[in-house]
Image (cartoon, rainbow, N blue to C red):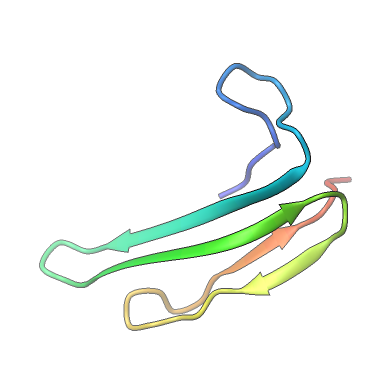
Length: 66
């Protein structure tokens, strides 16, 4: 998933702390919700997601797109 920093109306959101949520579920399988607080304030960062049997790997990558 990529996010351009805009809200549903097409306006850039204010810099600050937000919670990013990943939800994974499978029919006849498991379910997982992962929440990560992120500070969108202009400092690049990569945060790995704690994995389980539903998500093999994932990470949050906050950076300026060139």
